[in-house]
Image (cartoon, rainbow, N blue to C red; front, side):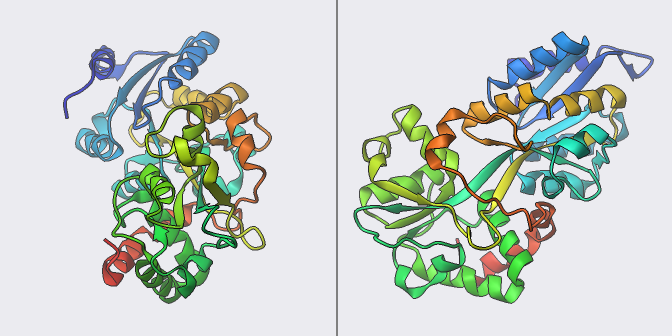
Length: 340
């Protein structure tokens, strides 16, 4: 991995140690988040506490591999990721430790935290159903409805390698069991309008182009088309409708951007202060505004653009840790049913 300038500067700061111990009053962050708006969070934290924030940014798998290679000598205190499935890989690698914080426990709902406090959610990402208004009069109302024969040849959805789909299927395993989840996945393959291709924005483009009538995507990919010109989507976005799935049942599937403390954290006390700061009103608003997401803290002020989607009932029955618990089963099912 070739580090960015920001990463190089942060790495230089990491090496400024005395007797093998990290300098006091600093927190070293490994982040797979790539939002410039996060800079304001780090600056505000330093302003209020005097604790410097050093940061290295890379893909989550690269950061986890780095933590494994560094072992007990890792300078990292905090790991930030953009999906529960990815933080689960860090959990499996044994590079995290439990966070002992009454502040986090009070502010972050239990279903958005790991049962043993190995990580918690920073912001919420809803995976919802979109449809072409001019071709669909009665859209599917649940994830389960997507498997019905009436949608054969009409659905656009990403590949099985996509972490968002892996987490969605993992949640279905948690709620219905492996066999029912496999039947659902096989039916989705039958109902695909085309082989899986591209990202979430490409699924929405499929609605505009007429390749499909129904698509599954994270909510913020849709909202981006209102904030800026998204080729192949913005011009036709007014014809795209949406459904908050499972509102009469368990609620919509919500994934998370997450935060965790590393096992080898050399600045554990300051790391906890930083993690607690991430649950505060300022940081929660920044997380929401940077990517049209929803705050993890109940009652925190969210992004104005999300208001156009209306209120929704999230799935609070399924602990998000189930996404990681069932990740391997989900991938095995995808492979078995031929979901590319």
